[in-house]
Length: 141
Image 1 (cartoon, one colour):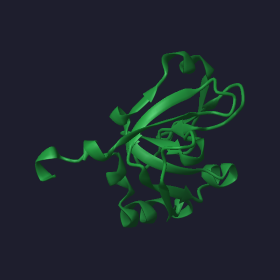
Image 2: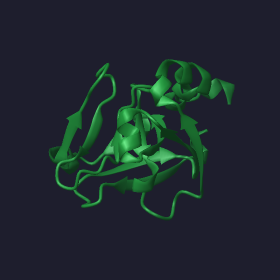
Image 3: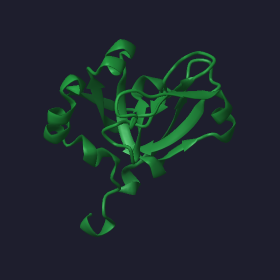
């Protein structure tokens, strides 16, 4: 329900990349053990792409890395190297926001769930992660 959403601001370490996202104050974040996420220590929440806004002046500071299926677009700051958000393979219609990159004060609770990225296909079908980037149908609320 949109009325349960708050605006969270965030970005990278050097503050060249800034964004805002509409999400609940209590969120589920996914800790993935794929080769990329495990090396970065990334734990992220997933939102529909329409609830994510990248500030226009941030675009010049981003670069993207892909591998494997090239579905995931791992964006990071060219200056400080922080991945504050990206397009995940599990939810190419959404944005994964690194929860530690959300500015303090708006997240009240973060539940950490595990995503077995080393066994991507089986974890994808078992976790229900795909639903995280879907906007709820207003008629079913």
